[in-house]
Length: 331
Image 1 (cartoon, rainbow, N blue to C red):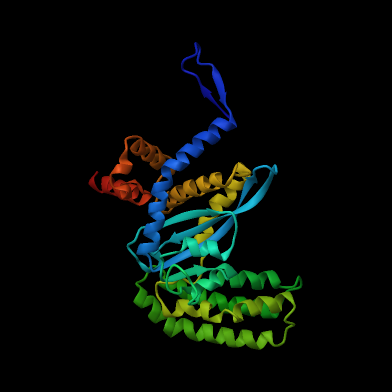
Image 2: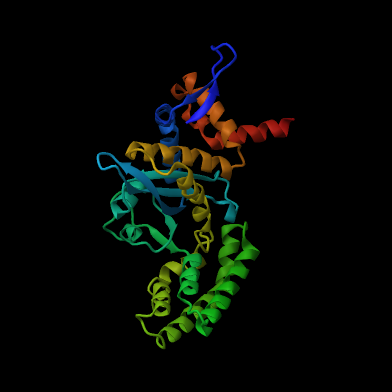
């Protein structure tokens, strides 16, 4: 628990708030912010043509067993600044008790476009005609994941194949550095002119190297990982709205992942959902340059005054960020 001053006691004696009281407060406030976070999730799905998706573990107490189980926080993120998009960046976390593909389908229901993901199988069925909740999605795979797999597979004594692969991937990233923030048409044109030859040569070379290495070895599996998913790794070449990797969403899930060390676990599944709601608001605040504590203070003040009966969009971190900018411009 934490300690607070009791203003009704002579001398302002210190009293301790128990964990049960704090947990009850978080549960109540988590329920209050649910409509705001749900509104943000709907906006991300309805207004975006490209989203990042990733997931991280969230330990949750399993009632009756006295043990923790593994839940998951699924992150859905929009950040169009890489191609100069005007939509405000934001991230929404969704708690689910597992990592099945059905959860990915539920989270992305109603969204049509491209998702930037790692190659986890839960997303694969979303790119097929069997997808429910919308048209088949386009999958853009993460070059950073492919690169890390090659590095992890490198033998202790080193590998000329891995070293050569990393040099080729670095050349692709150097081209990306020159067009970050440019308009989509320009990004696509540069990629078609400069990146495509390098990428095509990389996969031809990788195929030749894979034929020389045991498929059952770590290196063989790392190369097969990229070769089997070549289409998804090349998707960024044909669309200037797509990035080369999904590092932005990986960065976004670091804060909830680090919080595991402090919180240990959520008390139940609803606690996991509250965890996801607060992570959504705080994460979106950070992406928009907003101080989370200031935003949350004003949010709960507005909620206490019945603002949910008005325009809920005014309660989002995006609107709050816009208000701060307006004040800064007028001062």
